[in-house]
Length: 268
Picture 1 (cartoon, rainbow, N blue to C red):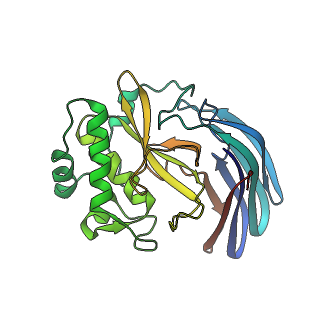
Picture 2: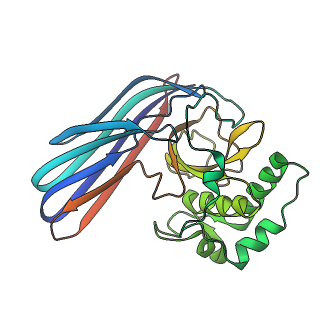
């Protein structure tokens, strides 16, 4: 499937700041699941800095905006051709061993509820176990836009029984790690057409390491594995580590962020 992307993130400061430094994970993963035909990232009044490919295979790009700064617009446009690989991430070059993704983080710290959810899953081998874990998270946390915020933990989302894709991914990661399955958070995009779903185009899911198969994606928010509708950007231990844009503003005052993402099929 050929997908077009337009992703605009706007930062507005209530008073001018002296400068802003950002780190981007906004380049689609180089793998067999997808190929980039065209991709462009611009930052208003920004100066591009150095870049590197981290141990997970993600391209990280630095940007600097010299102040005084009142408003910054990060614009991403591109075209990506995707392939359905049954959820398996194929051809991604990475150096980090899977065992490194077993560690707990704040958002994925398990409580008694997550431990019980993980313990109830069954499967004779790792793959069916991972599928059952994902299904249980889907059933336990109803997709409810606005029910949680960026700081909600997996335990909190499970306790209230509702959340968004970030919460589904965190909960599945926590449960997988409890069952000794390496797991990580993935950020990207999801194309939704006329199927009636209300999920936002900026999306998140989890990947679980299956010995002999590799990293397999699971999207509890949609009760499926990633297919040709998904564009993968990057991964991390949790949402903060995998964030497409991370940054620091130098100066007092507060920051307001607005995000607009449009994903379309080029065939339509």
